[in-house]
Each structure stands twice: as structure tokens, then as C-alpha cells.
Image (cartoon, rainbow, N blue to C red):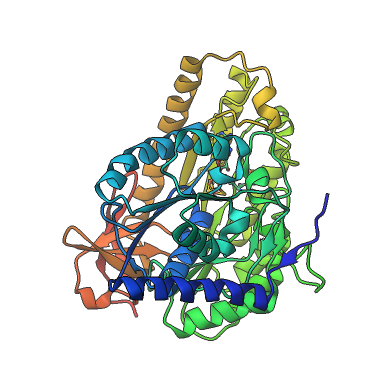
Length: 470
Ligand code: SAH
Ligand code: SF4
Ligand code: F3S
């Protein structure tokens, strides 16, 4: 397999900017400002990609709007992680036939992880003739070219060839938020967990150069960003493919050393590679948020092996013990899959006992969804759907009780929080660990760090008041 990372050259990117100029000129001739709508499904990687799509669209002269109705361009940036995610996209795509009928010049694009699956692009080709362009994540950097080809040739465009993946620096971004930013530090995944589609649709693991990441972080901090989340499917393998000798902990420490009042966090950590060096680095740096998302997937070592996760229950618990010992205030979250093929009742109980032992602040819970082409989709799966739903409900109940208890323990304590917005007459803020706190205050506080004393709690959020503590 070709694992060499291709870096998109400056001249290749300049060609894309030339397409942006052509598109701008096209709309100048039409004498109006066109509108574009980008709809994002899935994880933060897709959110970050959508910021690039909006960046390109803005450069092409489009105004970014919040609904598909009447937009000249609609881009659906899709997720393939579970069947339900794909069904939602096909449903919403179906609804766009009506939107397009009312505005026949509308151009519709489908991109993201679903577009990286051949069966999806074939289905679009055959059954969705009003979709004008399909491109996988590998071709996002060519979006201006694809859009121009659709506008000028009046022909459907499919940029879906499979590739190991590339890195492109310098695509413009229109960020969603002025306080919190995503920074992708790497792309793709080499882990091939047996249930997961991501390595097939996002290609091989590839790291951005440390200097490029540092430059982006410095720029964000200079612009007033206060909360930066570093993104990668497995951030702990950062740097393994680079010539320079740098690992994820080194990168974190260097970002934390940038001057300014900000926090950095990251996702996702793979338990196989998250070790003492990472936890010690987090503990030693006040600017690294004491928040860790460490997906465990299952509490059974047999199931973990069948998932190809490369750690067992004991190793996972040992990592958590160490992390908590050096960071007593650590906020810990995780992902778990219920009903992996062949999971027995006893193995499911091991998942419950792991949750009770670790006591996560919150959990993202999923029922196993077979993904075409992954090894797990071909495994024997005798457990009936109803039984999986029962296990799922039981697991959620156990976790909700734990989340509620942990939140109750916050009451009476004071936390430094970033005030990040307002909602229904209240200001909203996040603790360092990412917990939501609502409180009454002046909107001028948005964008600042404030000390809040927690006065009330529910399973999902906290309420508080401003504290005198400076
Ligand atoms: N790279 C991250 C996870 C990305 S996907 C990691 O390894 O932790 C986010 C979560 O979706 C996974 O952690 C897993 O819990 C869930 N997931 C992935 N594939 C799934 C599938 N086929 N069925 C159900 N849940 C799945
Ligand atoms: Fe999927 Fe596993 Fe890679 Fe995460 S580490 S993206 S679960 S293959
Ligand atoms: Fe979905 Fe792709 Fe993310 S499959 S979860 S959008 S990497």
C-alpha cells in the first residue's frame, strides 16, 4: 500500500484559487451575490472540513446562508459512521428535490465520508439525478474546480477515486465561532477497528507539520480565540509519519507554551497509545484542559480483541488510574458500543461494571451498526435487536445516574469558566472540563474567563452564579 503522504503544492492550490476567481467573475456577470448553504453531519472532523468549504465558497463570492431554500449552492457534508447517519442524509437529500424544483438553478453537492464509499456514489449516480457533484474527503481541496466544472460544463461531476490521502495547507476557512476553534493536526486512521468505516473513507494516517500547526494556533490566539481543540482520529499517533522527531505530547507542550490566556484540548485519544508521557504533560501544563475523551468501546477483553483495539480491560483501567492520580480533577468521557457481534450477556455486564468502576462524567453510547466492507459486518451476530435495545437502555440508565451524581458533587464548588454565549435569557459557560454552566450576567462577559460557583445541577448541565474570586 502506498503510505507516502502527498502534500498539495502551492501551485496546485493556486490553480484552485484561479477557479475561485472564475466563479466570482461568473456571478459578477450575473449581477448578484449568490448564496450557499453547507449542512454538516458527523464529527468535529467534518465540522472543520465544512469551515474550509465555507472558506472556499466565500472566496468564490458566495454569501453563506443558514438554509437550503433558495440557495444557489447546497453542500451536504456527510457522515458514514452508522447506518442511521446515512439514512438521515438520504432522507434530507430526497427533500432537496422540492427545494431544487422551486429554484432549478440550484447546484447540489454531496461530500464527506459517505462520498468515499463506492456504493453511495453509484446510488447517487443512478437514483439522484439532481445531485450535481459528489466528492470524497480526499478531493475537498479541489472543490472550486468541481464547482466551476458544474457551473460551466453543465455536467455532473464525480471526484470519488480512492486514495491514501493528502495534506493541503492554506485552504481559506470561515470559522463558526470566534472563541472556540478546531485545529486538525492529522487526518485519516490506520487502526482498522473491525467495526469502523473511517479508515476506508478518510485514508491513511497523516500528520501536519508541527510548524504549520503552531502557526495556526498562534494566529488563533492573537485573534482572541480562547479554546482550541486539536483534532485527529487518533491524536496519540501524531508525528509517527513525519521526518522530524516529535510526538503528540511534545506538540501539546509547545502549543501550551504560546503566550496568552487560552485552553487547549484534543480528541480523540486511543487507549492503546495514550500513556504516562501524555498524562504527565497534561498535568504539568495549566493551559491544557484537564479533560480526556478516552473511548473504551467495551469492558470485555474478548470483545476488545475482536474489535482489534489492541488493549484489554486491565490496560485501559490502569491508564485511567494513572491519569486520575496525576490529575485529580480530570473530566473523563468515552465512547461505548453495545451489541458488537457475539457480545454475550456476561460481556455486556463487564461493560456495565467498567462504567461503574471508572465513573465517567458522560458517555457517547452506540448500538453496533454493521458497515459494509468492514470485518465486523461479516461476523456472526445472533443477538436479537430487542435484546440489544434492552442492553442499550440499561447502560444509559446506569450512566445517567452516574452523571447526575457527579454533577451534584459540583454544587457549592467554584470553577474558572469560559463564558461562551447566551441561551434563553441566561449566559452559558464551560468549565475547564467542558461542563455546561448557565448563569445570570451581563452579555459583555461573553468571551472572558469568569469564576462561577455552582448552585444547582441536572444530569446534563449545571447552574451557577458569578463568584468574587479573582
Ligand atoms: N477515532 C475515534 C472514534 C471515531 S468514531 C476513536 O477511535 O475513538 C466515534 C465513535 O463511533 C467510536 O468511538 C465508536 O464508539 C462509534 N462507532 C464507530 N463505528 C461504529 C459502528 N459501526 N457501530 C456503532 N458505533 C460505531
Ligand atoms: Fe475508527 Fe478505530 Fe480509527 Fe477510531 S481508531 S477512527 S474507531 S478505526
Ligand atoms: Fe462520521 Fe466521518 Fe466523522 S464517518 S464520525 S464524519 S470521520
